[in-house]
Length: 185
Image 1 (cartoon, rainbow, N blue to C red):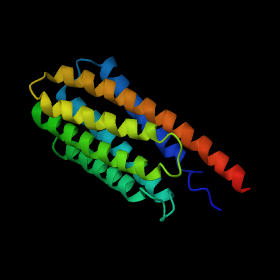
Image 2: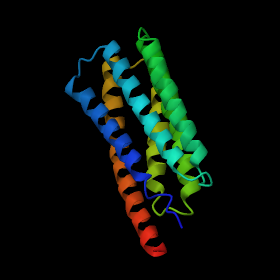
Image 3: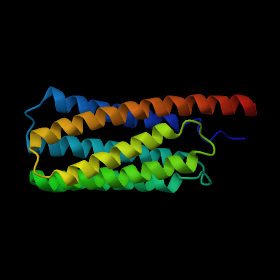
């Protein structure tokens, strides 16, 4: 029996790494301009999308939740492309792009995790990642008048927590994949 999780954990690690690096950059350069924030967000969204698509492609076609992970990847790539194509976005427009992206990808992450609950122990870590995204997006919509520096700090905290939760989920997935492989050998 082929272990569908054997090679699926490393793109999750890369997604987590990208998120943490992105989050740390927002704190290292607190006076970041809107243009730089757009570029940082674009790079993060593109990398997150690419690695989510790689994960969905690597999973066997019959894997539950594979499609929702692919949708999450595609939406992240689209959000990143919008950030590059329209670099002159106002702070409010960027805020709404980030908020919508966080909500949609968070929902997709939760759907993916719920569908995996039958085969993956401790799927709550992926659910937590998705819920953090949804809450973050809702908060951005609820407080659009906040200053861009406040948004930078919120984005940084979100990205770091999200990235760390992906690290833990990836290592759990790798361990689970090794246990499945050992059990089927």
